Length: 272
Image 1 (tube, one colour):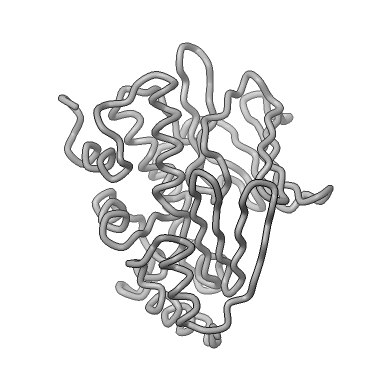
Image 2: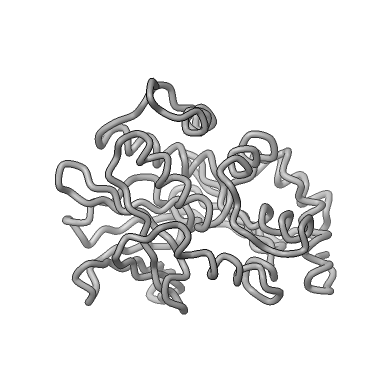
């Protein structure tokens, strides 16, 4: 651990990693633990806009405090940039890239090069990407519950595409491309994500992965994936939501009641 700045030693401790991982095995451990330990959620964004009246980028210290004390994580604008920084602090050749969805560069992802081979890493999409994806062996498919996540080449010779399918229907995805970006490149996009009416200001979204399952919340709809099975149910009350956060998500310290209240203030609509 010598030579690794303290914030990144703390980061590793919060991921449950001892020592300084290296090589492909180390990358696989970091990615798996990060995706399982750090949830995809917009609660942290709701807390910022409520507390400060506006949006801004999260600092590394705030991000780590959220993980340690509130069972929080973040979106692609926190999880991927800070994971990129951690990988660089450990000596990995890691680049932060933009990805296009309905808008260019609206998403972030990571490309890591090990021994001349590029790997795709994405800890900020709420997808089952528990392992680095080797980019010279595409296409690559991940089955998760009723869904398929397909990674393949695209028309951009420097990029690749991820598409999520349910049955034969493509529901969403993104196209990753160069050049590598500094975190500041996404500043305006991050600020725009706090505007009333934007996705993360209009819903409650939490995704948590475990080694053998995942749980997802979109407003009141709870989705559980285990193996090839997917189940859904609608939550009917705040106490039920709080119980789900404790028992299903293993996030008992998440300030879910406050998040619901903030969302109601922003949208002007009752959550339940």
